[in-house]
Amino acid sequence: MLPAKLRKQFGLQDGSLLVTEAKDGEIRLRPAFVYEPEVWSPEETAYFILINSMTKEEWDENLPHVLELGVDPARIEGLEPNHRDALPARSAWRAYLKRRHAELLQEGRGA
Image 1 (cartoon, rainbow, N blue to C red):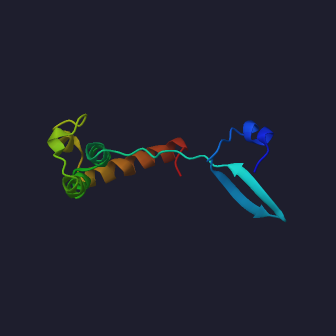
Image 2: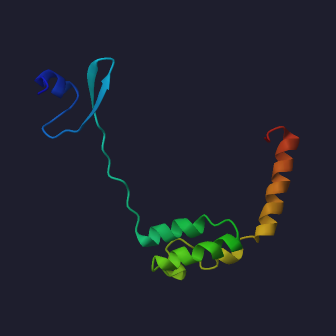
């Protein structure tokens, strides 16, 4: 049982979760912070997968995962119907990254 003063100071109530730790011959207690993780719908998950595809090939690799979720890519809110067509091919994307890296090196900002 914790004294009322400590319970009030740390905002603890009956059933509050605590983290316990034994260290240097002491038992230490501190409030545990619990949060509800965000749960995405299949449509939100599909959107995230496809919108983060950087090339046409990556889109094609990711598409089976979206279809496994039971989501029709043409019906994903916020995703343009021609999104895949606007993506570069993998070779073009790599060429762009190589050019950009060279530009950054020239500016003294590259690694």
